[in-house]
Image 1 (cartoon, one colour):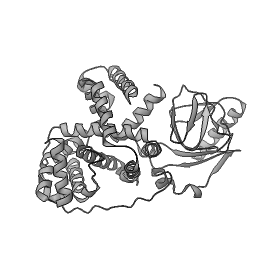
Image 2: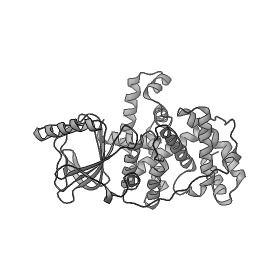
Image 3: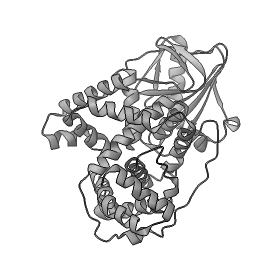
Image 4: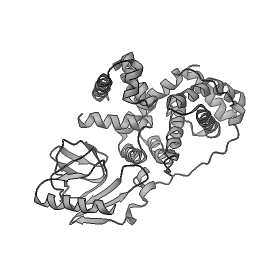
Length: 209
Length: 177
């Protein structure tokens, strides 16, 4: 499947409530930054709203309308922040404890209880990632700045979804660098000599998880 | 009950706190919400419990409904969907509430250029483009969260056909969205 197809699948699954918590946060942040994606999601929600109206009836056996009049519903306040849904999970981006992987490339990982790992990646201007592919799908959302690779240029609010077959060499913009949110379903496989070093690093790190 | 009748009922609930109007809405929509939860694999006890939660939100938070932003059916669907997500997450001990994740987006959309008409155009396009069988597969796979295997069994078609049909639908959607 090509990139756009998978993108629509992600939005459709988000609108249908089929994503795990990590991917849901990823998709929500995407929609927060990208109004076109939010628009598509709303269209799918409308479609499902129509399906609800067409549903057959299963009368409730014990429940009456009067049981629903006095429930305590907690209202929450929405704190305005730069990256919306994501900020709720990782807090302010100013207070993140970055871990430097190599010069110009820092990351911060967080697990929220499902099999995926949400990772923030910060690349200094001009930094590149050696040619690599992935054991599973890789989801990348640009939060700030931009990067480019063999497939094009990606700026704030753009996503790239890569499957196993895709190899790429992302380079952060010379001017502003790049801040991304990613989910990698399985470990990344690097190519080349520096790549071998990173593979070894990934291998060793897997013992400490 | 059609969509404009639903909107009128919702206005009575929001503005007049009309319990009779809420009772009418309950009679119409609660059995359909209940079905939705059953379709999504909940037991009848759990389905009824979540139906109560959804109906309670509709009554308590009716002021959150904005008819310029979405159809009543869409608003109710999103409440039910989020309850379903949180129900399944509770078993995984994930403390993040789906409303918390999504509220930002809806809040943002309010200030956005996004209008009901833009969305309606897209819904119309989807409805024109997809035939009955394709809509059925979308409903089973996404609205009812059925696995490809389950869909294959119910429609009595090979698993590969289900997968290729879904890919075909996504390709169509890609062209029009």
